[in-house]
Image (cartoon, rainbow, N blue to C red; front, side, top):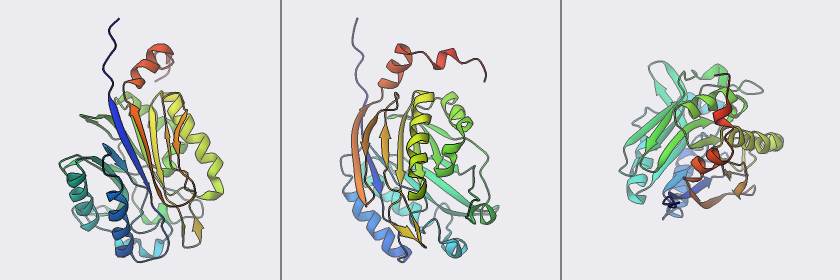
Length: 264
């Protein structure tokens, strides 16, 4: 039997420390960390890193349109790195209101996919009262593979990931500001979403403390068996791994759990 050619992908997850500094300082630090990701084919950033998830008093003032400063900066970086960049999420200002929006940018700096967070968090959080939820599951087919986008609290809703699976996703990209206090939930849920859908999962989490809420760090890259390929600590770092996207098809052929689905 002829061996299929490997579909190698070099991943870099930027675990950015998000404190109470000015937005401009975070943008500069993100630029520096992105330079450390040179050579990666895909770079993933965390949730609301440019503002700080818990800085609810800054949401309206720091929100930007889709063609604003943050997206423009990341588009230029993607083109310079010649890499796909999932820029984490930012506060998008639109005619409908404010959204927690993730953008996947291709190697030319063009927008490949836009996802607006569907499940807004309400527990000791003002996100649900300040933002407008998205409505659509978003998966993007690229030359590097098919990627499903999601954000933080979404991890608790497996039905979203089934939709992404049915849309062809081979890897889930998760932008997050998951708290340290629920780190064990993070570990269980990221592995569950990878295992039950036989997909790779790359989850970039924030580090540091924003408005007194400490993020959990521990950004993680998982294979379709739910095995940890790389995991960060609790401080700022760039996490790397090289994977073979062809492992998704091989895993599903070896252990055909997806093919055994009855309810859809």
